[in-house]
Image (tube, rainbow over all chains, first blue to last red; front, side, top):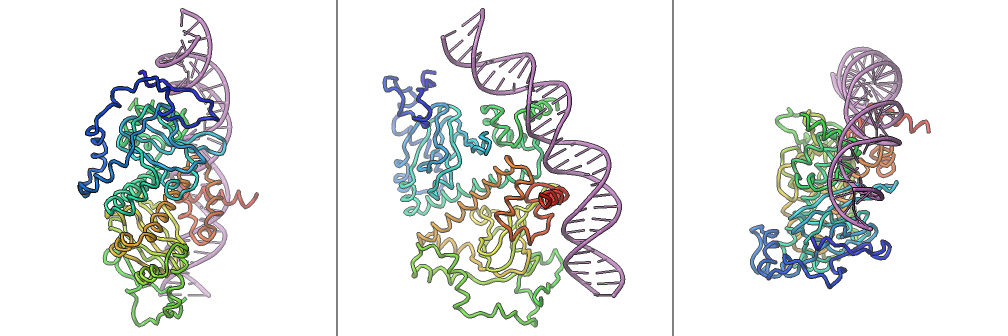
Length: 229
Length: 229
DNA sequence: GGACTTTCTTGTCATATGGCAAGAGGAGTT
DNA sequence: AACTCCTCTTGCCATATGACAAGAAAGTCC
């Protein structure tokens, strides 16, 4: 667990702590020392829509840069403009908003294979209202806005792919919204367990609770009820 | 009010009733008999992002077809694939989903200048879970999927515009989701009044209630409380 | 105009969930 | 091992909202 070591910066100074900030005297963990073949492997799966031509992938894949985050690192901070997005190769990530009373509300959880992106901020170039934080140590593949724009406007398959991802997120969000109205908390929790079991197992109850729109107290009781069924 | 006349078809036969189905013996209302200059005027405002070049607009605008709907007409039915979208020049539109018990849940309201579209169904080409229905008689400008695709892939400004609309919808949906968690019903209602006052005035209370995630009974009481403040 | 349907209001009572606080159990630190 | 956090559970009571039902009010149709 040598790489769970987290350097402590004064919060105001350095809210975003990336792996680049690690003390260089620590040796890189062996899993990070991989040859190009292996590095590409993960992204190849991501773009495994048959639609992509080989030549296109040869342009696209090298644009992604491997970045790793330590547990609790921020990928994005409230108030900033989202200038990049990531695919997760390993680890869990959470996004959350801050409500008027300062409490945080989980807005999403991400795991292996997911895109971590603040769509509105990334595309509308305005400052985000969300924070994105690593729940565990993570390995990610990063693309920045400018590079994205270039690929988006020059490769038709790439923009179809991007659009489909965005619309997929929209759909998921809408289903959740409807569920907030039609389902009781217990039902919403059951759906979450069904759809994202790894998330439920890896995320503290309180963070799941705000995502579901209940208090941690209630969620604890809900779990108890479900267990006794 | 001559054109609130609505032809009745057996439901199973003809769930979607467009203006084309009207008895041709009715004369068209004068507002529909407009010259080309006027017809283009509305859409010009829609695409009034300075970014568009004149030549581009000359390609884009003629692709939109004017369609009008009568009150209660369906623009889209659950189970179908959304093959077109509309800009509203006049009137109000509601989309709604049907919950497991058969009750309908308003998912959105649209008024002048809005795009009426089921993003997921339109782009992912799968059958929708929503219905879209005219709340009043409407004048709309319609584009179908194939034409959209052509414009999207051939005109960069057009795709930026489309992407911005989609992301804008995503953002609005997300804000609503968060509001469902952080705000009480009264607060959510106040926000709706503030953001879409015309909607609140033109939509029956029950339909507003399902949108806000409360019963019509509760919303009625909420209104009373607010009135007495 | 009168009958009918739909929409909205109001009362009574039930229920899901919140607020608060105390305590149990783990994990990490010294 | 003792200490400190942090997470989770549980009890007690409060409150927002739902369910149901009866009217009132408004709109629609013939």
